[in-house]
Amino acid sequence: MAILFSLLFLICLFFLTVLIFGFYLSGPRYKGPKSDHFDGKKFLNPNGLDPNNFRKVLKYMRERRPEPYKFNYENYVRSERLSERITEDKIKIIFVNHSTFLIQYAGLNILTDPIWSFRCSPFQFAGPHRMRPPGVKFADLPKIDLVLISHNHYDHFDTKTIKDLIKSHNPNFVVPLGMQKAVERLGSNKVEQIDWFQTVHFQKIKITGTPANHFSSRGLFDRDCTLWCGFLLDYNRHKIYFVGDTGYGPNFKEIGNKYGPIDLAMIPIGAYKPEWFMGPIHITPIEAIQVHKDIQSKQSIAMHFGTFPLADDGQGTAEKELRLSLKSTNLDETDFIIPDEGYIMDFST
Image (cartoon, rainbow, N blue to C red; front, side, top):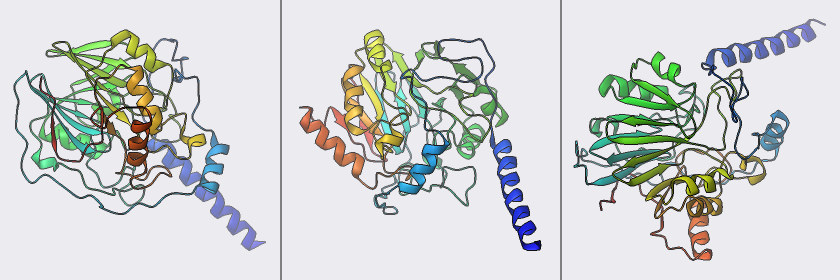
């Protein structure tokens, strides 16, 4: 009987600990009027799909067959500091890795979903870790003017990196609805939050929030309580689209019809297996090509692959599938670039 009580005590203690940490990690909630994608408590996807429930998560954990990753199999890191500033008529983009880009555009330096931490996790002793280093050292960044954050997941909203950016660069931030308070708590007083199809201005750039199919959460009690989005940048009639983290849906044709053609798009291709589980929140390489077509992109860049093992597709799988899909759809690899970390891509016109 004593053993049974001890076992029950340990089980209760475990679940209590999980609840406490789940509450502690949960972020601020958005409070605002209802809309077609906010029911007053939670945000909704334009594709009408909900990310998988707890039962499907258990099935995924039980049946998953992860493909192999090799640690640091590509480890190029720039050895020189990047240019502090380029002229307004130039456009240069550097892929750091995962969904982090340095965009030099309109005379500004812009970062997307910056993460330089070793793990995308609330703790640096556990959770998915890097399989390749950032292609640019944090210390070698030029002065950062603007940071775009697509949603609050740990591989896109890395608080250690955000704190370092605030301390070293004190940039402006544009974030989805509900995330302003989370960034302000890290020390910034230059944060603006944005809804889907809402436009704000930063210096000479128009920034429009765009719909994505995903979800949000930091802990157990804040599921879908902040928005997720992409960002369309428009300067001097040259449009750059950072798609964010997303599954496929009708929103992309709507974006193409409303804002296309797009000059340059950054589109995710990885973390999509198994498709029955990841489909609502991540696109496959062939769906990435469909997004490229839907938004009328003149040229696209792949992202969200090869850095963190977040799903069952392994080393090189997404890149290989994208190349095969490009051939089958009569597109050239120059139409949809698979970037190397740390190298400057010059799109100046």
